[in-house]
Length: 127
Image (cartoon, rainbow, N blue to C red):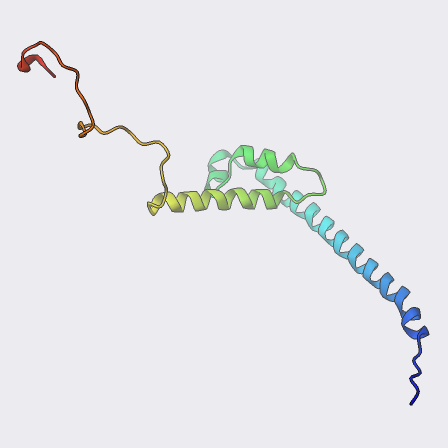
């Protein structure tokens, strides 16, 4: 039994396959850049909104400035979406009582470990 294989066919198909892969990658890159440009021009409308309208969608004026400070080839709507989602999550956590406040107020009533200094005044004058 002999094993005869044609080694030239895969070698001939390889440059075409590589060209197709490079072309597909270039097309994806170009599509992403065109979409980023479209989103940038659509997000430019946000610059005309006043602060109340931006707050309604969960953004601030500085968020819009930060988004447009990124390079031209990056999509500014990704940053705007991220910031709006962060605020929405924080607001939801606060309203549902899931937040842990790092700063707590001291208690108004004295606790057991509270030690009052000794005084030589009568008790009725001690506050």
